[in-house]
Image 1 (cartoon, rainbow, N blue to C red):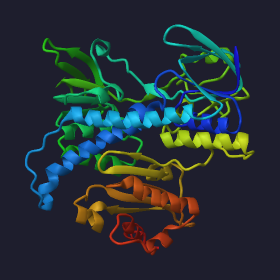
Image 2 (cartoon, one colour):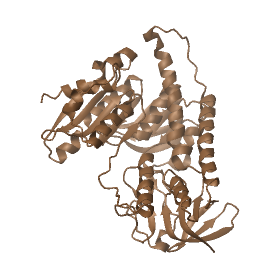
Image 3 (cartoon, rainbow, N blue to C red):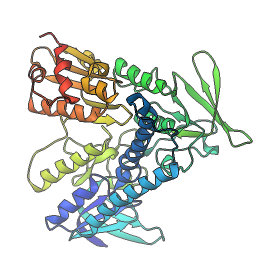
Image 4 (cartoon, helix red, strand yellow):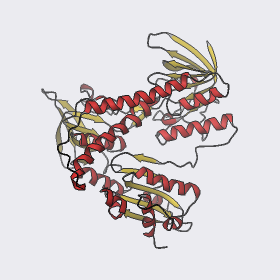
Amino acid sequence: MKHYDAIIIGSGQAGTPLAKKLAMTGMKIAIVEKRFVGGTCINDGCTPTKAMVASARMAYQARKSEELGVIIGSITVDLKKIKQRKDEIVKQFRGGSEKGIESTKGLKLFLGEAKFSGEKEITITYPNGSKDILQADLIFINTGAKTIIPEIDGLKEIDYLTSTSILELEEIPEHLVVIGGNYIGLEFGQMFSRFGSKVTILERSSSILAKEDKDIAESVASILEAEKIDILTNVEVRKISKKNNDQLVVEVKTAENIKKINASHVLIAVGRAPQTADLGLDICGVKIDKQGHILTNKKLETNIKGIYALGDVKGGPAFTHIAYNDYTIVYRNLIEGTNYSIEDRPIPYCMFTDPQLGRIGISENEAKEQKLDYKVAILPMSSVARGIETNETQGLMKAVVDVKTKKILGAAILASEGGEIMSVLQMAMEGGITYDRIRYCVFAHPTFSESLNNLFMKIES
């Protein structure tokens, strides 16, 4: 039996910095990781996917170069080289995280699977079958989420892809069928289309990006369809079977009929579920919801005093930056005596299709549902000088503002570097800067953010 001041389960974007900061205060800290240090973000999430998105964008830009008067010739995509570059970046980031843990005095890394064996007791099982038992007064759960595998007839009989396994491909799929029309599915769909795959996206809702405003979802769909990506909505995947030549047949039910789609690969991208099933939460008494998310209060503490949950495992917005912010809230409250909570914090996010979709605050749909007195400003990117100059005119800027206070309630920026433009508006929202001030603000010319002037000029008063 080994006693620590605190145990962190999971070395993701909340767990690792929290473990290091707590150890730096003089506490004796244990961090347990069953797979790779760094969690999903570094190993098979943000870092590798955005590295590969950069390669896909380069291929797309190269094919478009003639529009700017640059003649390149035929374009060849080497997926093995793309994967090699991605792997090197992941190795660099993971290595940096490991080094940071190893060099922190008072912090010990355990590479095994953690399970509660008491209220404040953890049993670690190592790959060789040996075990360790740790106890601590404080326990932080940062185990993240994993791909949801839907119940589809025949799915278990094929080698389907997930957002993790697709990153290991070294040959470009002939025809990739993506089941799921949200962030993960759309990013991978566009990426592999640009690599040279035929891509079909299947979505059970009436549109892709069903939680976004209709005009935003339709604009994204039109951009993808212009790149010859097939998008089928309102469909139910009924069955997947394998032909004799290892080709796959995906059977879908549409409003009109049953349709069969031949495919070489199938990517499952219908969502992610919290990794709580194997934690032994029934033993320690921590409560979860029907989906398996750990229930916490606004300060991220569970129903058991001294046990906290951070990141995707607790539900809510499943973003790396939210997990990191969870760490800062818990650390400052515990060590610095502050009183921060997750209530009313900004939730920015970005989908890294090309163009990007940057989002902050509420959508127009949400403003309607809340019966707010609001106005909407919309500016197509085809009217943005910087976009015209760089040949990046797809998408639009959209903002929702309060009529009386003139505060910005939310924004959706579907544009080249949409995430960066969105961040400008987030800073305005954080600082209480009203849209009428941004309308006449002096921005450097010619930049994308400068067009926020023109965006808010769409509102008359």
